[in-house]
Each structure stands twice: as C-alpha cells, then as structure tokens.
Length: 324
Image (cartoon, rainbow, N blue to C red; front, side, top):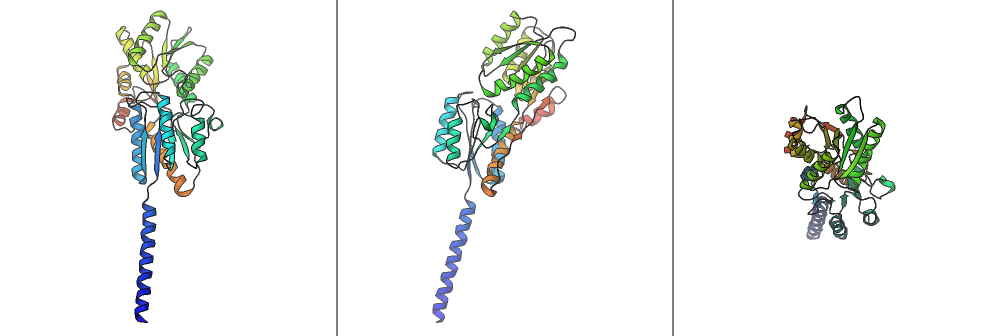
C-alpha cells in the first residue's frame, strides 16, 4: 500500500513538473513581429526607426526584424517582402503605406489571417477608410507640411509677391504629396506663388535640377522641400552660387547629418523632426499589448518638432545616438 502511495506521489510530481515546464515553455515563447518599409538601405533616417524597434523588442523580450528595399522607394521590393512575410504567419506586422492603393490587398489578407497590421511612418491618404491597417504611428503629413510653411513664412521678404519652390523628392508617393499639399494650403492662404518640382532622390540630380530652376527663376524667394535630401542639395547649390546664408531661406524634413550641418551653417533655416525613434518603438509596444492583453490599436502622432539653429546642436548629439 505504501509502495502504491509512493508511486502515485511520484507520478503526481512528474505531472506537476511537466505542467510547470509546459507553462514556462509557453511563457518563454517569443512573439515574432516584422517591420516592412519603403526606406532604402542607404537612408540613415531608418536607422533611427530601427533602433526604436530594437530597443522596444529588447525591453519586451520579443523578436523583431525589419525588411528594407535595397534602394529608396522600391515599392515592388517592399511588396515582395510583405508577401514573403505573410506566408510565415508572424504574430504581427508593421508596414509603411507609401502608395494610395498598392498595399490594400496584402494588408487585408494579413488581417483576414488574424495577423494584426499597424502602419508606421506613412499612411494611406484615406486612413482607415482606405486601408484595413489597425492604427497609424507617425507624423500627420499634411499638417506637418502646413506647419513648416507657416513657420518658414517669417523668413519671407515683406512688401511684395513671394515665390516659393517646392521640391518633391518622391512624386506620387503618399508622404511627399501630403506634405506638399499642406505647404500649398498655407501658401495659398499667404498669397504666395509656388511651383512643385520633381527633384528625385538622387543628390546629384537634385542639385542639378534646383540649380537649373533658380537660374530660370531668379525671383525665387524661398525653397521648401518635402524630405531631407532636397534641403541639403539646395544648401549646396546656394553655397556654390555664392549666396549668403539665409539669402534664400530653405526648409525641409528630418535630421540627416548633412542637413543639420547646413542648419548650423545658416543655409537651411528649419527642418521638422517627426521623431522616427517613436515610429519604431511604439508599434512594437502596441503589438505586444494587443497580443498579450487584448488591447486595441490606437493612432499616435509622433510629432512636428521644429529644429533650427537654436537647438540644432542638441538635436545633433541625440541624432548621433539614433534617438532623434
């Protein structure tokens, strides 16, 4: 009888141990999240987004990986990444939506499979009405364009007609067109004339086209750009033309190292920081909370912080740490 009790006790201990190990194994299983974006491998902006993603994943003890195209804005490669990821059934997907319709079907396919999809950095122009993504983490692009133009207007000449060149690095892409739309809305209110110019995302081409435009339109009073490469290109052109710092004010977006240097030199007056670290960090946090506790997704405007000569040095230090 005692022997039977001993055997029963041992068996019960084994069962409890197996149960305990099973619970631990389940608890130790990591969620797997994937970030798919349009930002090329050479674009340093995305290194900050990546750091935010990695920091959040480390703190929450989840797996996270980012897929980027080899060249900036290669949407076909981004789509190929998305389809490949979809076949792997991750626990959650983060994606940019740089085209108004191209990613509608694949996002819906993910949602139908029970994979939550969060949009970061660049949203469908119609928001949730245009794409099934669950939330948007990023800058309100049109408002950001409006605010930059409004802030830059203090540098416009007074007492006459103002003409502004709007440099568009990615014609047709959501982020570029929405920022340009916001700029135009303010410039219409201000009573300025303006012209949009396709300057591409190639620095040499950008400089060539800006130079040609300024020679053909000497009445240009200011240059606004929807990205970060264009202001840097404009600064180089103005410097080579022998223009004084601030003679033709320049404004743009993001915190590329060369752009911050141009601000300190005075050839670029302002840039808007959309705080990309948060665009990597917050989506991982959201997906974790959704999977772990059943929270719903929520939109976050990551900011429209103006950076100028007064705070460029401080921001530059943080930028080197991939925090700003």
